[in-house]
Image (cartoon, rainbow, N blue to C red):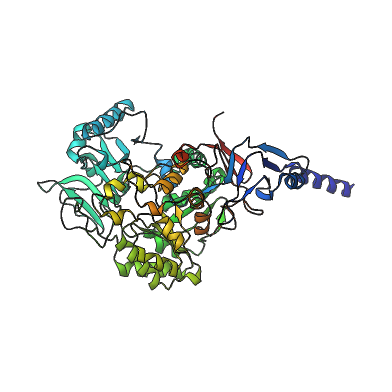
Length: 560
């Protein structure tokens, strides 16, 4: 009887596993991304979250077994799930509150008056109480007819009795009204912290524009999401990524409160997407003091990937750090101006050594060529070489010089480029820098030729989370005025897809886990309505995501 009971218990335990079916994907174009040139297979079998077979359909049916679920692609194209090279996942939760200027239901914002109008309408529509906060996202002064920032006084004219903060699209600047400045305890006598700027009017009063580290003073005063609010918004955030075909996301500057939240059991319970966290360097010493901290290892779907360091600002906000001057001068109009570093070289050298000695990966934000020089010097000071395979990542590497490519190769740097700049800001950049400089932004093709493994990112919420648009900008490199920035740097479709799959997977030390359709790797897939390899360049951005699959489970599909 005891043996029978034991056998029965074993059968009960085994039943769910035995009943779990494999899924066979067939009936469309399946691009494996395995190799330097396109390779297709007829069918793929997913089982237990992994790829069990990739090859001909007859072999797939044998591998899947008679009880396999058949997923007929119906002519669609399947690729490995996209890997997010750099964005800010936490912002996807924060943006659920506030006024989003990307909202297509809003009237066009073309000048300061229309910006004031949509803020005024938002306050009325949402019955924002007196002394309440109004947070405005995706503001870009370059899109205004006046070509300058809205001011504190102009925001006061909208609602002096509410605290209004208008966040620049770059996330490196903001504009606050008087009530918000008072909430942050900022007065006309306040001085910017090192690495920050506070702009002033003709009378020497703060005009509300805060840049770089000065923005932290305001951000600290703004209302923060509670853990309960974050949990309520978590699924919507990951669904936003899944809708773009991402099966791996990044939070590119994780603050301590978000680090605690994302690593909590409550968040683990809800997360399905793989989420890589980059704790910000300002909390480095506290992390170094914790022996329990582990980088590079998943706990459920979350891992601490590396430490994020910021060396300069935003080129479109004219706070990037260069070896040449901005033709238009500083944000306050002064000349000459080539930007300023966010920290000095010695401080970065010491920081890079600390991170490297602990064996952690380092991610550095550097836009201007002088900031990139700083990154290279810091990596050298830390003794990093390509032979060490530490894979330091320079996020943006936006205005890289040709000579810096050889340094990247020597050190083993993975450049995470930002091809969307060619569309959104190349025309602005041309008002500050010569043609040959702007033509070399995000030099994806030159980086490949130098033997580097680049990736491409959206830096969401700096630009929209749109994987096909990113692919298109890497191929077209065109601005809204029709100017192509560096035609020799344009990628073909397969190369552009590598920058969304195999490139970022390698940069995250996950090339043997994701980014390709290959036996043993995760069954992470994106299914598109058209084949990017056969779609004309002009049609790339119109390709639609039909479905996203994470470890064999359909986690998002387009409305049917």
